[in-house]
Length: 409
Image 1 (spheres, rainbow, N blue to C red):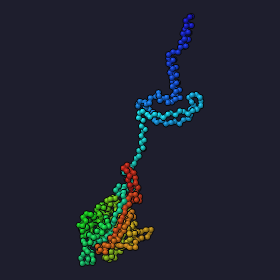
Image 2 (image 1 turned 180 degrees about the horizontal axis):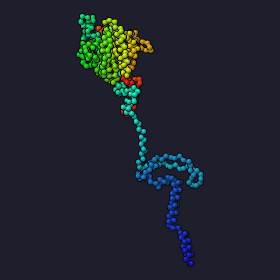
Image 3 (image 1 turned 120 degrees about the vertical axis):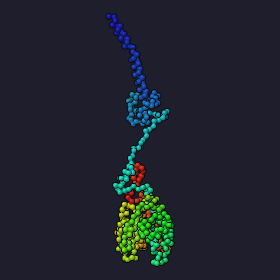
Image 4 (image 1 turned 90 degrees about the horizontal axis):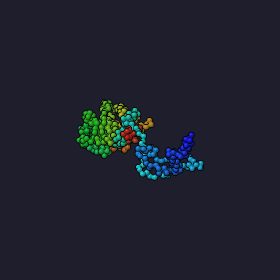
């Protein structure tokens, strides 16, 4: 019976003295509450108890991001007064002692450009072809039509009075071409002795077609070009009626301008005069063949120039301009349904397609005054526009850079 009071006393005594565990828990709780209160009231104290940097392996994306102030509404004060006060702003951070984290690089979205082959196919469906880089620029050159008076007309008993032999006249004729910086010329009555002499005097400086290629008697109407300015691409002939309506092959050539890469067709003709009988109908037929050829050659956009002794003035210029669509550097053209011609005309002509710009037209009669020939030297400057001036040309960007496309020529 006396044990129970001791036991109750012992329990009462134990409740009066906290155990060690209870003491430690209470102390820990006080420390946590104190720390929270201090951090709340004085946020800068967190810097003192937080390491300035964490181990590299423990860095988080949040730690790397620069500080951006958040926009928030005022919060009640931690003092418990209940009056709202703005949340304290963090003070400026001191310069970091270690290297600042590098901002992630900004990569532009990848752009995909077509290959040149893909562009060629797409633009080809629109009738456009890629222009080689060297052909982007324009070009200008001087062209001539020159009846040099054939060697057969100044020899033998029927020789033309007052004129020297072809051999004596050709050097001065070539000097006239050189003085005017002619690089392409259509020559009429340039017979085989004169072809041989050209080679003897100039070597390979001039290209020629047909020259002697079709035989001695087909050299009369030849086209010559400066080999340092032009490269021959193609040579052809077309049959044109001459004396008595006989069909004679006459030349046309495709030349490529070495500097610009541009290509031009040149044709050269001699329509029959009335010396062997009335030839008006043969000239009319020849004119139509020549006009049809001009339209055929220019259909793909290639410039065309035609030269020749046509043995007609207005009678040639008006129907030819209407049928071919070409213009002469002396002003002859078919405009608005009517023919436009200059006041003074020769039977010798230069005509060109309208994608050419002509200037500096001249009919030099000094060749007649000097008895070098019985025809004037007809010359003009022809200009080919560059891709930026040519109608219908368009630039495109490929994987290899800018390329230009133009109507086929």
